[in-house]
Image 1 (cartoon, rainbow, N blue to C red):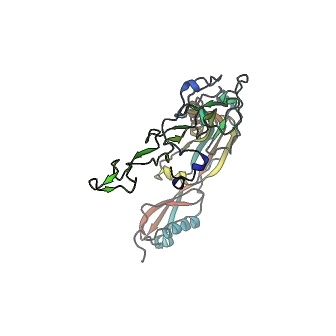
Image 2: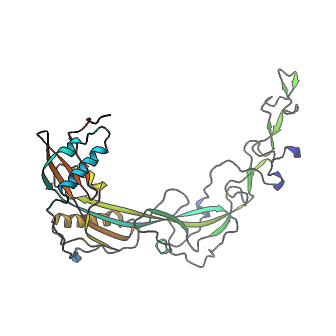
Length: 372
């Protein structure tokens, strides 16, 4: 091969990287590790059941008095200002009805919202392999690795989704590469180790145009240097990256998730219940600990039922595949007021809800009245 035609890496003696192919090592290469006998290499994440923890008992109900609310949370002036802002947020709405209306009644429909959050941790081990670049080997056959749920992992910020991958101690070892048989390179699949292939111009004939002109591309030889291996006849193994050896270890994927159970006591007042998820309320009760206990003494028994239902659902759904690290629950009172008013001798109404004083007025009389 002409040195002037050599690739930039040729001086190092390393052939180009081979195309991707089957890279998973056979199961026979994996060491038998106590507590990790059933795991494989690659594939989907398979989360293991956590240690058994007791489910909180209903006998420890929270004893906290909560005030009942039955008066409007806003006055007439705030109700009017909320509707004026609502009209101004819509380009085609006139603010005249909001400014000129006569308020007849403020009718409160204050609603309770219960919310439970469970912050969970899941763990999935699997064998991993990568090219060996003098990584630390800690598996000497006489130290047992810690079980999956005893591997120390720092817990991130509570109630926020996160994911971390860590190497399990005492599982790392070095083995010869299964694909290249420890050589670091494999046969080129295009030239079959010859380093040359048929010329793509003359298709191996050496001549062009019916055999009258010699092919200038291959100088009449009918062969050219293989571009896939640059004439080396072999390619760098894409599994070990030319190292000839692989570094094996068990990797633990730790996943943290925040699960939420939320329900609102719907008073069937006409306000779409889904709107309440976008506003905040007055916090009447809150508790946070490793395992929260069902609320038992809230004035509205429906909140007590929601609390018991939510806690039971979370332990049933997540307790078998995840470890519940922390729980918190709270009760909010969401202010909701229905405003009845009159404008141009016609009766109308709208809702003002949430601490933010959001407005729901699907039948606002000033629609499509704004001057453009």
